[in-house]
Image (cartoon, rainbow, N blue to C red):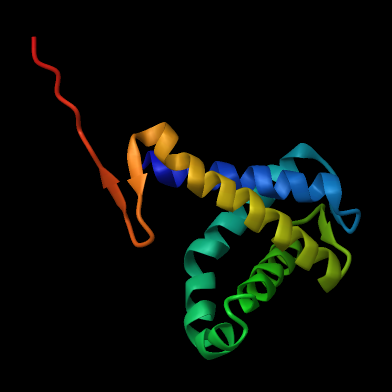
Length: 133
C-alpha cells in the first residue's frame, strides 16, 4: 500500500513538474491539478495496461519508446476529462510524458530507500531484520 501511494505521489510530482516546465500544459487552479492527478492515476491503472497489451508489437519494434506515446495520449485524455486542465497539443503532452517518465523512474529507484526493499529487474524483495539481545 505504501508503494502504491508513493507511485501516485511520484505521478503527482511528475505532473506538477510537467506543469512547470511545459508551457502547453496548464492547470487553472490547485483543485484542477489534484483532480487531474487522480484521474491520470485511475487511467494509468485501468486503461494504460490494456493499451500496452494491444500495442506490444509496436512497443517491441520501437524498443519501448512507444510507451511515451501511450503516456502522452493518457495525459491528453486526462485533459479532455478534467475541466480547467489543458494540454495544447500532442507535442506538449509528449514532453510532459517524458518528464513524468523521468520523475517516475526516480520514484521507482527511491522506493527501496523508503520501504527497505531491494530492486530486482522483475520484483521487489523485502528483507526483514530481527535484532537479538
